[in-house]
Length: 304
Image (cartoon, rainbow, N blue to C red; front, side):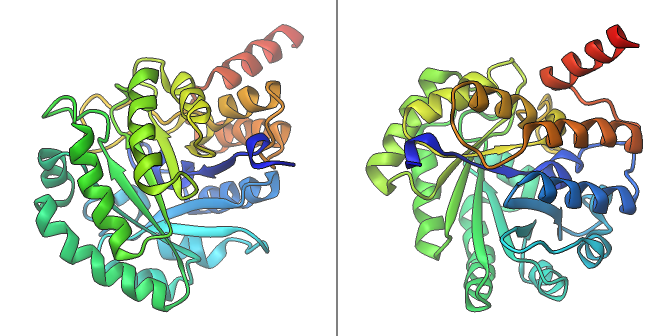
């Protein structure tokens, strides 16, 4: 199968999906969620975060989750890591991948990290270097790449400036994020074109939120422009604590429908993923917002 017929989906639900939920999800449910996602065929799962629990109390049990999950061969179990202290915790937890993060927006970066963009690079560099020295996969996130709740639209030049520095640090992969869900397909095509010319697209992923219902369309625009790596969150879980108005991530189950109908291989079992979503609704008490889950509920009601 050619690269053109294959995409890689990173499942971010256990971290990005749960970090903004007011209702706490029990540790054992998080563990089972990760295990079920791996069984469904996901090969990169963002399990949790080693940001200080004071800032993200929903993920304060990161060590416990990593200690309890089943480690399946070929699966990269990663975590968000903000600094060297967080990396120490992540290494003790035996993560497979380290995800560092910052924003393309100066104001959002200060709200999210409490530092300017220029002040953030020296914090991330030793994290990336140490993680690479340990043989770990390192991913960088650039938030608010298409728009910021405080500054509005972010220029392509500003995004490229941040991306340049992250790749210079030695990251393996970059996820470009529409944190508040304001992007439209033409904007995606424009930014991807610049990224392709400057870096190539083999190490570029796209991360969309669905505030205006554009996330699936933006994924398809990114695919058409040559991107083959996308982030998704089970059932559309998610949001950003420091981006007012940000809605959930693009739903992994909706992306699986899109790519399945277009004969694009993902390596993920869609029926198992939907079964995991239905189980998670029951186990967590949260109602998932994906179109796929809405259809499943209607079908269940009709057949009852």
